[in-house]
Image (cartoon, rainbow, N blue to C red; front, side, top):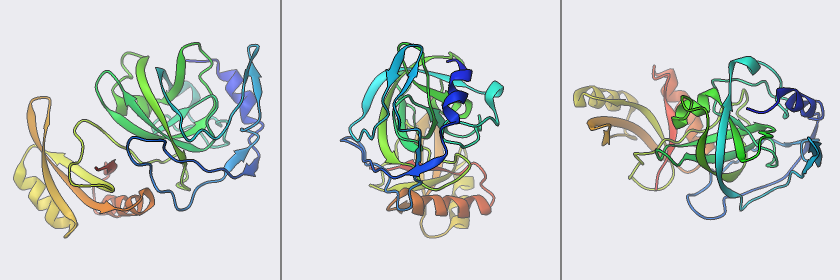
Length: 253
């Protein structure tokens, strides 16, 4: 984990508004953000840390492999470089040069798990580390216990106006095999009858998918598909309102 005092120094410049745009360069389809948050002015200026210059820029083709670290309790509630409050349980991350706030897809190369994270901070300023994860993101990717892990990071573009650091989440394996778009996962159940009753509660767009996880067959209930991340997020909120507090977004195709 990098030096937090340096991060807080950068937070002081996150005051004005800029606009930029980004898309995913190849690979899986990027979220279609119809109401992007403005890029925070000041966070795109060149800055120097420990004698090294960093030059933030829009990087639509950004796709790198390297080490990820994570940070949590000691910084919970403190301002990030974007001006947002750090929520250690949200799916967020810090990056040295990508626009703030932005979205990245991070893959844990050790287990294949993926998550789409909201980048709202600067760092990590440690050689060999390309991204710093919130505790929640480290949990989602399965690398909190080891502290540091090898990951692949791909820039997806502008982050939506979701507020509070909320972002879309993707987990793999397993992947949804029902076509392109975004889906809402209400839950995964060991008992098929429970999954069936859940699907009935969620209406005509709900379906059941058997998946293998750790040698066990689970029955995953998903709702969709939705054409973009914003539409899927609205659906996720509706699913949460029906009593499924852990509902998350997953990408298909």
